[in-house]
Structures are given as C-alpha cells and as structure tokens.
Amino acid sequence: MGLQFVVGSALAGVLNTLWIGLAITAVAWALGRFLPRTNAATRHLLGWAALTLVLLVPFAAVDREPARAVHVAVMEAPSVAPAEVPEAATQLAASRAFFPLELQEGDWLAVALAVWMVFGFLQLCRIALSFVYLRKLKRRSQAAPDALLDRFRYWVAACDIRRPVRLMISDRIASPMATGFRHPTVILPTALLAQFGEGELDHVLLHELAHVARRDDWTNLFARCLGAAVGLHPVAAWTLRQIARERELACDDWVVSRIGEARSYAASLARLFEVCRAQRRVVLATGMAGHASQLGERIETLLASGRHFSPRASLIRVSVTTVALLALVAAGAQAPHWIALAQSGTAQSGDAPRPVNPHGSFLAALVAAGYGNLSVDEIIALKEHGIDARFLADLSQSGWEKLEARHMIEMHDHGVPPEMLRALRDAGFQHVEMGAAINAWEQGVRPSTLKEATQYGTHLTLPQIVKLKQAGVIQ
Image 1 (cartoon, rainbow, N blue to C red):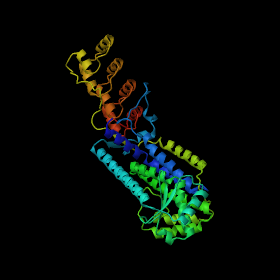
Image 2 (image 1 turned 180 degrees about the vertical axis):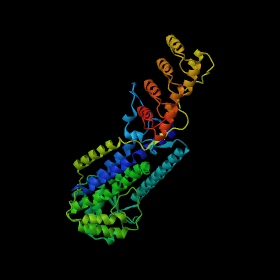
Image 3 (image 1 turned 45 degrees about the horizontal axis):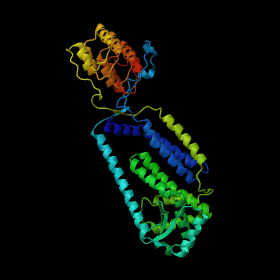
Image 4 (image 1 turned 135 degrees about the horizontal axis):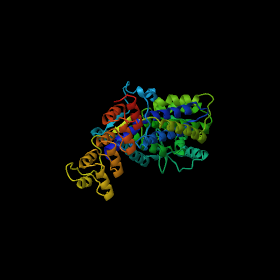
C-alpha cells in the first residue's frame, strides 16, 4: 500500500462524508439552539461530540483497496426477461452518470500532502511561539497589589476553585488573560488597575477564573493542536471556531451565576473590550476581551430575558443529542460514494508470476505461471481438458489472482477466455467467484460489456451488469 494510495483514500473518505459532516454540525447546532434551557456549557460539549463524529466518519468511507473488491456467491442466476428488469435499470443508458468521480493516483496527491503538512507545520510553529511567549510573560510579570490579591483570593475560595492559580500584573499586555498549564496564572494589564473600579475588576477576575475552573487552558491547547492537524477540513475548522465561541459564552454564564446579575457584567464586558480592542492575540491564552464580531452576541445573550445562567453542562442533553447524531451517521453511511480512488497502471502484486512462454512446454508454463505446486493428478486433469501453455500465458497476463486447478478447468470448459478475467479486474472486480464469472459469460457479458458498464461508475455489481445486458441496456 503506497503513500499515494493512503493520501488518495483519505481524501476520498473526507470528500465522500463532507455532506454527513455538514449534517452533523447543522443538527448539533440546531438542537443546541432550540432545545429549551440548553446553556453554553452544554453546547460546548455538543460541539466536541459533533467534531469527534465529523473526524471519525471518513474512516468508514476510506477505500481499503484501489479498486473495489466484490465477493459474489457461486450461484446460477436465472434468466431474466427484459420486462422483469426494473425501470430504473433501463434508464441507465439514457442518463449520463457523473458519480462516483474518480481520483486518479498521481503527483497531485503528493502536492496535496505537502500543502497539508506545510499548513500543519506553520500552525504548530504558531502554537510553539505562543507557548514560549507566555512562559516569558509569566517570568517577567510582577506581583499584584495586596488589595487586589486579597479580592482574588476571596473569589478563588468563594468559587471553590481547587487549582493552584496565581495572580500577576504586566505592562506588556493590553488585555487580561488566563494562562496554563501546570501552573495556571491570571495576568492583568497594569494600566487596567487605574481605569477599572473594584466591581469591574471583580468581573474581570471572575471571567479569567472561569477559564481556570473549566480547564480551558488544556482544552484550548488540544483544540489548537487538533486544528493544526485537521484545519484544512472545512467542517472541522468551522466546528472548532464554534467551540471557541461557546467556551467564552460558557464563561460568561459562569460569572453571572456567581454574581447573580447580568447587566453590570455586560457593561464591564463592553467597556473592557473598548479599552483592549488593540490587544495582541495569543493563541494559547484565554481572556475576557474576545473578537469584536462576538462581543455584540455575547452582550445580547447576557441581556436576553428569561435566561437561566448555569455553569454546568447537561450530560443528559449531550447524551441524547449524541445518540441522534450517531443515528444520522449510521444513515449517512449507507449512502453510495461520490468519490472513488482509481489506481493508475496495472494491478500491483508482490507475487507477480514470471512471463510465460506460450510456445514452451506445458510443465514449464505451469511453473512460470506460478502453479509449480500442483499435484500430478491436477496436472494430468488440466492437460486432459485442453489447457495448454498459451492458455496459461494469457491467464498470467490477465493479472488475475492464482486460480485452483478445478477453476481453470471450469473456466476452459465453459469457454471463458482469460481476457474476461482481465476485463473483470479492470472493471473493479478483483475477487469474483468463478461460478459468477462463468454465469456472466454464459449470459452474454463480454469484456466490451464490462467496459461499457464502467462508464456508469464502479458501483454496479456483476448480477446488475448481467441484468442490464439481458435487457439490452448495454451491449
């Protein structure tokens, strides 16, 4: 299994399940928005559940082989009259088929892999630089004034935050932030102490403590690393942004649940953003002053009438919604593939037989074709049924898997030429039982029939091709 096949299969899997990913995120978003009393913390977990399914679904659609492997049971299919063929089958020739689209192996797959690796590498470099910056910022920050530190300790105890968190101030930042990981720290801009009153500073401290209590430093780190790996997946990238958005809304709910009043906190949020709108954003730090595009929504959400501010996620709602999403995934998995990976060139095999001399001796031809371990009785049976070196040479060149002696005899007795096996392989049927191949030949299926059937795609089964042949849809 080559690298190009792995990359092509992964890409085909993502493209085939892209619509399922869109459906998953749409359903998760709708349920999170319209189910009553679903808070931001619950929607945050729903986002992670949806993202997990979006990333796992492509694995179910990954092609295990460059061409489809179809196992057809040995059976004698009865003749089917043209009138018995479904109407949909008779319309196949009248409509141009566009799916599944075939991804041909080639250098473009290496380019796609390089683009993905460069994107991931740049994102990881950004994460590493942010980590180094935060470590330097912690070391260069100063201790907070005693009065502010006392209020900070009061809120830590009042909110039952059990992580050993510190409070620092710095003149190197424009916005408050909470940083991790093993030693979480809340860092406030020095200038903010003179511009904010005591109540507003309490709101700032509580928001940053919410990030610490919820361990958003770790989930943010995981989300950033995951974004580096799957950031080119459009649905996954959008879901990660929604997760970050719900994280801030969940912290807002956490603060209001402690202070019991949303209006004053919303005013502090608006004022803080106005003061800190020129901030430098650090990817591994979480803070109260977020994007301008989210500020209006956060304030509107805070001031919405009839809201119930709860800091905890509803595991029951998350579980029920996840079950609904799993049902959606199961239904989507039954859909046919839109994209198929087609291997260029001939079939590859590590056990390819040596070229067979069609004019050589029969025994030498058997050895060259890979049949050097047959019994004497099997060799005699092959010869008695008219199998010669030419037949073995054609069979070897067809690229088909090694056949048993009885299957070669059945094939020869029914007049099935080795070219039929080559045509089956080229059409995507790499592992067809000999009985099915013989039945297809007797029903009039020829290499040209199989070639014509592939124009409709690689999803037709051999019995379906037989029916189409009998109905006169294909020649």
